[in-house]
Image: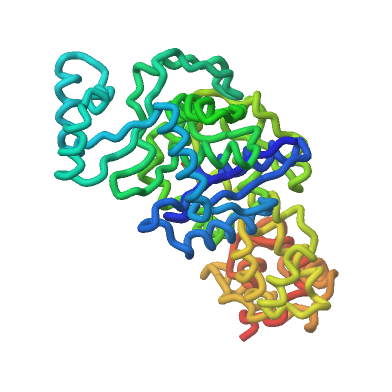
Length: 441
Ligand code: GLU
């Protein structure tokens, strides 16, 4: 069975970059009738916060990315300790005591000599007495996984055939000096124990994948299928990393972006398929194909989400907005007609309110001085309220006859007198909803 996971660290809010990872893993699981695991990578006790874990769940729920189960790394520390012991037993794990400053110095020296800044494994040459002395002086060291200096190969679901020389990579630190287990080993143990078959994540994890493949093999696990999607950039190709904080999913939600608009966009950008608004999660699942994604950085423009949001809303029937209309106090018997008028004139749900305010309270009239007389005469011909579906045509015909005006010169001043705006809903449909006409004084 296909099992995928989305493994955020609960150290902040999810942003569009995280969503891409979540969505791909979700769609693969659903497309194959498999399972989607939400795994909280919370091994950092200082930075992980329950409120972020809750926020992550809320964001995924908002988008309809339902998970089959939740796992937390903080509850699996025993398993990581067991794996660490096993690595020690097979001589693939060693303690090292260099301080960050010392490591930095080593790296600089290597770079100066034109060498790659790879950890030199000095700790492997320490005698027992030297180790004891370092331990006495500095306490516990970090624990590094001893890579096997061979090529690491895999066929990536997006990048294709990858081959990395393990000698070009530092032996990864899996346990910190203070005993904190790091993501690299925790993730491997989890992926193996939880039977994860497919891992899709950002291309910033490619080197991790290389080392993790060796760790999985050392622990006797099965290597999952890996795929690395390209990272998002801004619309001009600029790095998005600094702006991701402003592209949190909860902010998009607050700004009125619709889940299916966001999902439809994220499921397609960076692929060779056109971006199409999908009307259900099933359709998204159906149309998803990982092999269609390219390796180049993917441009993301938050503004692209709004036309899709508008298009999504235009296609909704009144049931989809009943809660919004109730909250605005739109009477039940008017909701259908009101929504028909409003939906084509909004970008997000937030825009519904302005049309209801117009219907209920009328608008401050906008009357050009040269039209003042024309409008005041026209208002004497305005049909009695409540208006009906024929009120606008009756009124404009009567005004036309009396004034001789036609076309734009006839309609525009009247529209502006009733709505205060040059553009907006079809007046014939709007009239029966108008409960107040302020221009009448
Ligand atoms: N917690 C890791 C991250 O957010 C998970 C990476 C992975 O998918 O393995 O980067």
